[in-house]
Length: 179
Image 1: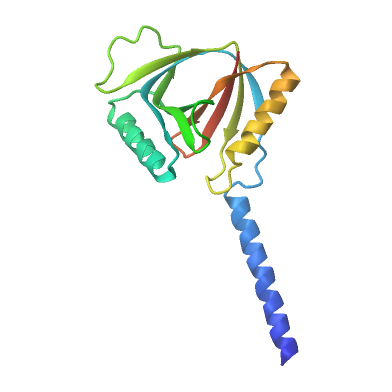
Image 2 (image 1 turned 90 degrees about the horizontal axis):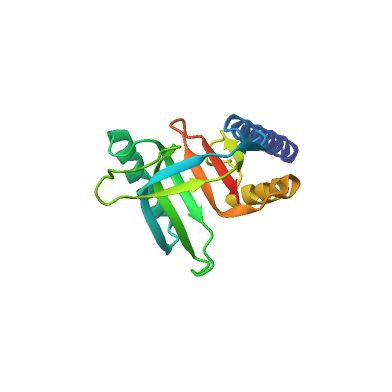
């Protein structure tokens, strides 16, 4: 009797492991993350700037509002978050610019009410494409480490800013720009 329970328990554990492994695989957890070196460009981002204590729910709400503005046509371009390294704020705070970006847009004349714009330029970009489901994507610290290693290999110094570009299919790319 005890032996039968042990066998059934082992079968259940093996099945759970197989289910977890296949789910992780299906969500893209085993997809490689590679840093690509690309030519530089100019980018204009139209959006809003925030410096605040980090709150996951509030950040998500602002992302949804911005996505809605893009989908409605109020903002044109790709959903973009520009994160700034800011040593003057606390470690529990975040400095970012959330909006829509277009590459090589110049002379922004008309902006929707309540929005601002920022222009960026670089000669070299380090970029990671992530198609994994958000549950199994590498965390920002891992991406930052990959970017720093690649920057050393390429002999470039990174700007204290990085971009997250969100695509309609829930994938995203992260870009660090060289000085």
